[in-house]
Image (cartoon, rainbow, N blue to C red):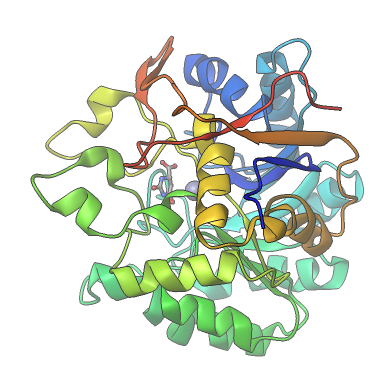
Length: 353
Ligand code: DOR
Ligand code: ZN
């Protein structure tokens, strides 16, 4: 059988994306809109996107950053706080603007200070979300100082997620950026109301990437990449075709000085080469026929949205792809994720639609 060198799929979506604000937003948005039709937009701005009115204003700002000629629909989320108003959430969802809420345990990651300290404070909102079928996206890590950072996800499942699902069985949950074998196994064990996003970088790097040979801040993100056995579990899940798993890049740009610092920010900017990296991974796993499910079909099915009608063509070239190592923005340069191997798959420009 001859090797596949061309692939046409429905245009993909990114079910977890950080677009930031201001000059950073303007600088990095084109990296996503070139390839992706829609994205779930994370609300962890400063100040966070808390109300439907905040999300409306943010959506307008995002649309102004989309280059002419690209079609892109931002799927807006609200940042769940202890004082989120269930009526506002329901109104935002009914209007079609709000597609999910995001739960950050306070202190878990970038701009999570306004997040949840006591989950019971969110019960009235979660109750309403269960009733109306609005998904909850979760940053699934505990923040207890006595829990090792490599165990934060597994402990979250036992201490927070399992009890929460028992209390709200009808709540539709997305476990964001699953990074562990325990996470994959838990999602697989659940028949309904649980989906999971997987990032590009967690399919490619393990913890050696940021710790061996010196501290490598451009491979530091949260949840941290774990040991190899976990990476292999994630690859198996992504390439299996299992509809509970779909792409959420968690592409999370920070200007280089903020990462190359004594206390560097968490976040990896993968948007520019996300599709090339994924085609590479799926090819390595002999699963190019499952790529469309992961990037274009499973996500819309879970969110109850139509699939995209536009197409995207991927072509495997003979020579390694050249891509910019850095994207310059008005907020400073942002280093692009380096997968550590040459990329051969490119998105054929002009082949959309
Ligand atoms: O690495 C990360 N960066 N993980 C997150 O959860 C947040 C994100 C960010 O906003 O920079
Ligand atoms: Zn994120």
